[in-house]
View 1: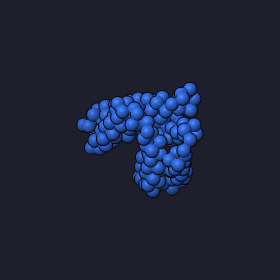
View 2 (view 1 turned 30 degrees about the vertical axis):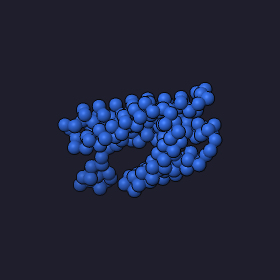
View 3 (view 1 turned 90 degrees about the vertical axis):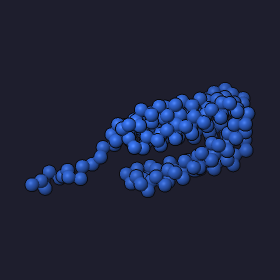
View 4 (view 1 turned 45 degrees about the vertical axis):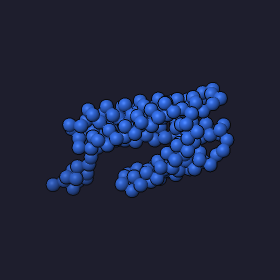
Length: 186
């Protein structure tokens, strides 16, 4: 379980860095069309999908939950492949995909906050930010501001995922038999 947790943590760190790169590129690249960000999103999802697919195959003998990473990897591969092969259709869906994704992320982060009490405030804030960005992206009719919102959301999502991966890597299970107060030791 320890190797699975650390491997999943590193995979999250890499995925977060990729999303931060996506956000940075959308914010600072000189593109007059939405095709540039769509290419980056497709490539990032393909790379992330390959990473999770390979990681889950490597961990299939050491962990019972290996198939979850496989499913996540396949979803990323299929989404990235669809974007790359159907750029025109994906471009028209770009805003809706990112907006709905941000809202779903906000809801899932809110739900996960009930199971992770140590990071609850951080998760509440991230859930609110993610849901708000999703709402703004879905309801914003101008493409110029949309690029800014999508880029900023990519940066923030990437930072959150990197932090979550780092927390997963550094997580240490507390020993219930360990006495934290030396003065009470027998």
